[in-house]
Structure formats: C-alpha cells, structure tokens
Image 1 (cartoon, helix red, strand yellow):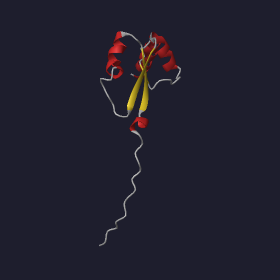
Image 2 (cartoon, one colour; image 1 turned 90 degrees about the vertical axis):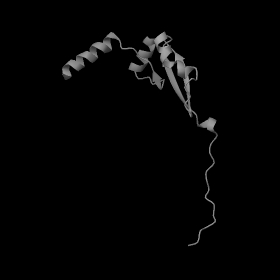
Image 3 (cartoon, helix red, strand yellow; image 1 turned 90 degrees about the horizontal axis):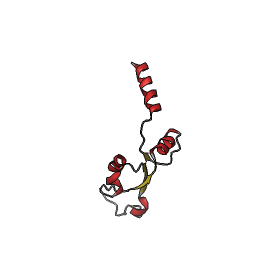
Image 4 (tube, helix red, strand yellow; image 1 turned 30 degrees about the vertical axis):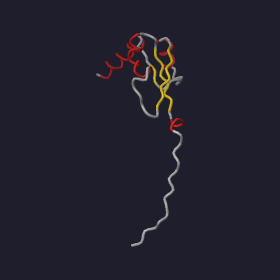
Length: 96
C-alpha cells in the first residue's frame, strides 16, 4: 500500500481577537443585580471567545423593553410587576 506525500491544506485560523462574541447584559444598579453580575463585570469570570458589555438602567425601563420585545440586549434582568404576577397566577389556577 503506497501513501501519498501530499500535504493537507489546513485553513489559517482567524485572529482570536476578531473571533470574540460580545454579549450585552442590561441590569439595574440595585445591589441585588450588581451582586448577580459582579463577577462578569469585573472579569472574575472569563469565558474564552466572549466579552460581556454591561448597561445599567432602571428596572421599569428594562421591564418595558423586555415586555415590548425591543431585543436590545442579549441578557436583561427583569422584576415581575403586579400585572405579570397576577396574570401568571391566574393562568396557573386555570391550568390546575
């Protein structure tokens, strides 16, 4: 059995810096949200190939943007409002 001496062409890898995906994270400046996102915001957690960009915004605005589906952020913190809590409990009671 003869083997060919032809080399296989391996495509060049792109510059790793250009292969970084940005994840946009929006949360309120409240202490509970700050605690949840602290490790990402201060680079205590590093994920190769991902860069996290944080936007601080009041929770009412974040809730409205999430509800209306504006899709500005990959990840957003929301807080259930009275309206969403009552509609969720009403749908749960119908399912029971």
